[in-house]
Structure formats: structure tokens, C-alpha cells
Length: 451
Image (cartoon, rainbow, N blue to C red):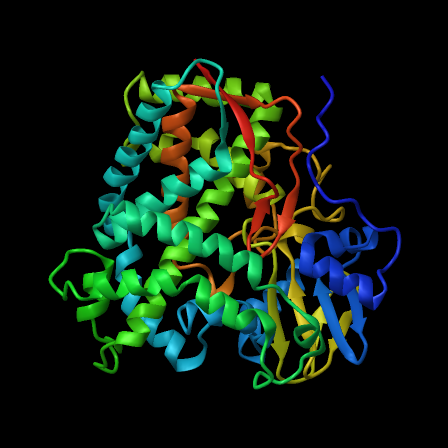
């Protein structure tokens, strides 16, 4: 059986003009790449006087994110996109502020904490399945919306001990609006100073105004809750003894709400899309679930035995990485290692690391446009450069919630695939769009089929 053609924007035969590039990036950044970007180690772009460099060499990425990390600061582009809503949380902060927050929050994501988060993950997945069980046979659902709501309910319960429907509605609506109104613009591509107002910043803050009100209410409960919010309110930096200010707590709570549910929801959404296109992978997944679970609900202790489920999710995040682009600014000239020679990157250059490109690069992957979970079998993973695949980033700023996200994704996938198959909905066109995260335009319509 031939492989299906997977949803992706067309690749341009040549570089876009500056005006078309700006329009395309505002609409969907992953649609802006020429075919050569999937074949070269370094791709240069110039937008009027501003130089951008896209880095597709794993060794060069390693130098940027690990070996010479202090030379590559978070870019103004990222700050202008995220700070209006997230403030100075772990994703946007830098320097000692970031290090202090990382130290304070690390215990909330250690293995013992992950095990404690698993029961609400399984319970919330069970609640979704119970609701689906009441639907007529063959009904069409929007898997994107279902996964967004499910992961939001999980993050609210696991991290903040609440299942308030008003909170879930407000966060879901606010985050969706934020992605629509906050887009990269001309000032960002030209690297103009931060004091020049960005058109979407005020709209982004308005989009999350209701979220701020609800977070203030949560914070008013005080420090005596056994969850992440309680930890943030009572914690002090183990090195300095300094607590977080109320504004710093707010920024980390919004960051966890945003990053903690959005990226996992998108990873699962694209997983269901890929499984709907590959019945042979569904058969292998179901065989593993039947063998390991024997008809019962999954548990945290089952995760090591759910190897194929993990491989499916990892391959999904290769083809459709939720965090599709990272950006840095070069503080001093540097030489990036390539397969042959090196590339001189100048001070002040905007450096882009684009998992959408890196994960589909012709030099790094065999038939990269094909869905092959076996790429992530232990033997295959060991042979691959660790910076060729980075859905959670890399280096010291690797996503603090990577373990939480993988635990959640595996348990949800196991819970749902044990009971249901999701088939393509006739006539529904799937189109990935690169906004702040990688979302399907117009959702993902799939037909529910009970096993």
C-alpha cells in the first residue's frame, strides 16, 4: 500500500519577495520556506537591511543551544510574540531571572511529581471517553478541540487543583484569540527597537484579561494548596532565599497554562491525524495496548511497556512539531560547524532554528515526509544526532515540562486508542498553520469508531 500524502504547505521554488515573505509569515510561518531550505545546512534570508540565518545543521544547533549558549540570547522576535501575554515566565525570561525561576520550579517536574500527576490525567481522559460513549455511532468530532479541552482540564487539576468550567472556557478562548491577534510583523522582521509599539501587543493583553482575573482569584486562595500554585506562592530560590513576587507568580502560572496544555494538545491532535491516515500503525498500537493493558485503564507504571505508543507520539512530533520555530540573536561573531567547514555568523544576526525544517530535512532523515514510528526504536534513536530532533528544544533551556507532556500524551493515547479508532471525516481538508504553535486550520474533523 502506498504512503498517503500528508498535509503540508507547498514549498516555493525560489525565495519570496520581502512583501510576500512578510504576508506569508503573518499568515503561517511554515509556509514561507523554499524547497532549498529542506536540503541545505544554512539558509540565509535578508529582509531589507536585516539578516536572518536558518540553521539546519545538528552540530551548529548544538553550538547555539549548548556549547556556546551564552552567545545566543532570546530574540526580540520571541519576546514581542510572547511577552504581552506570558510576561517574563520561563519561556521568555533570561539570565539570572530565568535561572532562579528554573530552580524554584524544577521540583514540580521531577519523577515523583510526574507519578502524582498521572491519576488526574487518566481520570480526565476517562471523562472524555464517557462523554463519547454517549454519542451516536459514527459521529464526527473535532479532535483538535477535544484534545485542547482535555489537556487544559488536566493542567488545571494537576497544577492548580481546580476543574472550574469558567476557568477552562476563559483560558481556552483567551489562548486561541491570543494566537490569532499576536503575529510577527514588519517591525519584528526589521529588528526595530522594543520601545516602538507593536500592533498586536495590546490586543494580546486584552485577549488574556479574563485569564488574569481568574488567576488572581486562584492566587487569593493562599499558599496552603498542595499543587504548583501553592509551591510558587511559598517557594524561595534555594540559592538566594528570595521568593517570587506576585507578578512573577502570575507570569509562571500563565506560562504553565499556555505551554502546559497547548503543545501537548497539538501533539495529540497531529497524532490522531497521522493514525487516521495509517491503519497499519493503528493495528500495531492496538496490539500493544491489548497485550500490556489487558482491557484495563492505563497506569503510570505501564508507560515503560508502552514503547510503540511513545514511538507514535515521537514520530508525530517530528512531522508536526508543536513548537515549530525557535529564535536567537547573536551577541558576538561566531563560527558554526557544518559537515564541511564552518559558517561565520555575525553579531546581531537573527538565528532561527526551525524544527519544522530540521525534522523534515533531506540530509538528516530517510524519506522524511513519511510517517515511520520505528524511527524512534531504541537502536535507531541511538544512531541519530541528538540535535536532529528537538520537539522540546535543547541545551540548558530544554522544556522543563517535557516529562509531564510525554507522560500525559502516552496515557491519553493509550486510554483513547484502547476504546476508539478515529477515521478521516469525508471532505475535511487538513492544513497545518504555523502560528505561535502548529495548529490545524479549521480544526481536525474525525469520525469516532468504537473498537
